[in-house]
Length: 257
Length: 257
Image (cartoon, rainbow over all chains, first blue to last red; front, side, top):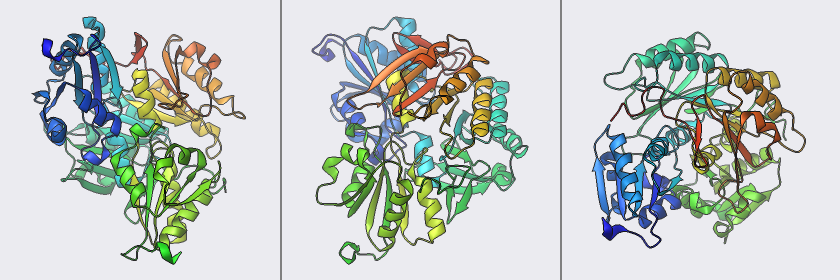
């Protein structure tokens, strides 16, 4: 790969967040990192969303569930002196590729420079589409028990429900994994009004975007998929003209007047 | 204000997130909303960061703590038929202006269209600068007790600490409010190793950016200000070559290989 060596000798790996989908949410910093890179590595679905950035680049596309391979390849290419962009949908720093890159760089003793370029995460994008659900303390919890034992996840759901956090649920459901969201809804029903607003955004900002506003008691009947993020309101959250709004305080809201 | 009426008759209010500071993190969607607006409303410090967008616009700049006035003015101008951008640093959807806009629009019966344009929030920007601390479930908690009683905040700190969430602390300290971060550190010390990594980012991505990596037991001695965000690691978080890394799972990290 000698043809990709950059001037300085030391390679560089950008871990780039491309946002929720639409290019209008891809930051200039992410754009610059993609332009500067000789090689772009990513999951095929995310690369399809940034096609215009791939022209003239070496592209290493991979299929779902090859995260470890993508990270390893990116680190190898960057350690050989290349400038590499490893693409991540959303924000690579929130439940995404940045952590695995550092974990594997540590284990492999990689010598490249690693820089994380933040992106608009699902939590930011979905909140904006729903209205203003994250105006007060919130927790993000993934329901995927692939790498985390269910009792750890359940403990967090209970803690967040009991302490009245707004909660953004990542990985609520997949084809094989359908029970967790039902259990999560039950946990919240132990602590919150059944009428508590719940927002579901699927494929935020993409052509196939779907926005659903429902309630905690109806959550288990809602259409939820792998591209969905679910936001459960706190005790103060309400719906106004189709928007989900969490007041910013528990005291008089105009106190700062 | 008849000269600002737009073609469609109905006014529009964009609540625009400008990101952590550097314009390289302001999205094209935010940029387009600013360009499209006739009037730009914001806190002076944020407007100074986006000077180039203000040329040829009517600008309504205000000082700190006039949030309610800024929202009211923006809603009035948009309801009169103007296209207005209300500017918010970070992401207007995370502890910022979006909620107050909807609250006040509801109370005033405002007729304008309201659209939230998400931005790179402090939590995204600071995580990227620190490495990869948010790879697992996390909570965002504000220590400001101006609109929220301290017992509510304390309950959430305890819940998040006990359930091993990574925690991003917003509004950790101001000139007048210095005790809360000390109390928060004490709560976490009841549940986590004193050597737990803590990252502090002040003025992320701006010229005066400062990044500190410390530990839970030394947190109260750290230099923290109004522009700081504090991220406390979970039980698995470690430091590698100056980066704060939370592993993405509790099981074998290469399981997905």
